[in-house]
Amino acid sequence: MDLPDAITDRLPFLGALENDWQPIARWALVVWVIFYLLFLYQALHGQGPLLMIDLVFVPIHEGGHLLFRFLGQWISIAGGTFLQLFAPFALAVYFALQRHVTGTAFCTFFFFEQLLPIATYMADARAQVLPLLTVGDGGYVIHDWNYLFASLGVLNHDTQIAAVVRALGWLGMLVTVAWLIYRSRATWNLPSRTHQDPS
Image (cartoon, rainbow, N blue to C red; front, side, top):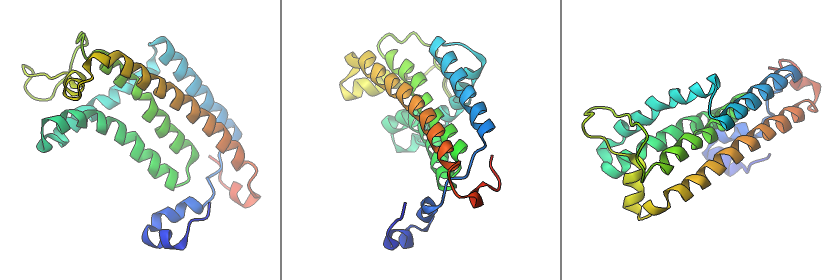
């Protein structure tokens, strides 16, 4: 992809997008696809050791509340979900600029995967039966999505919104795996000079 010189002069890091993606070995692609298919299987059934990766995002979510608390209550509460999604998104952008196929796919996959627990939290906005975690005063706990949906006037549509978010998560994960396969195979057809160090 050739970018206009005016853009790359102002934003030099975008010049990296003109580079070829780093090649990935066939065996590595097979291993990654098996990993993602196994993860999708466990996510579909709602149980399995791979789903423990969601625990990594709990402190990130809670950290978002703390990070944005100086900007007001609404932004502080929304900040948990924002940071939960921003972390894998930012890493995906970094790996894309490095033209690293598997790193980009991994971070993009888990960006979309995080929409599943977020959707579960959203669907609980009215029922409020999920156990909640908080940082600080345990006696003062706000259900993020009850508060956010109520403030937006859409609380009665919590389950419908959650269903759409969940569908986007599944679609995004499947598209990411398809992209990984497509992009990896495309690197196999590059000139041999790019195949010096496949990973």
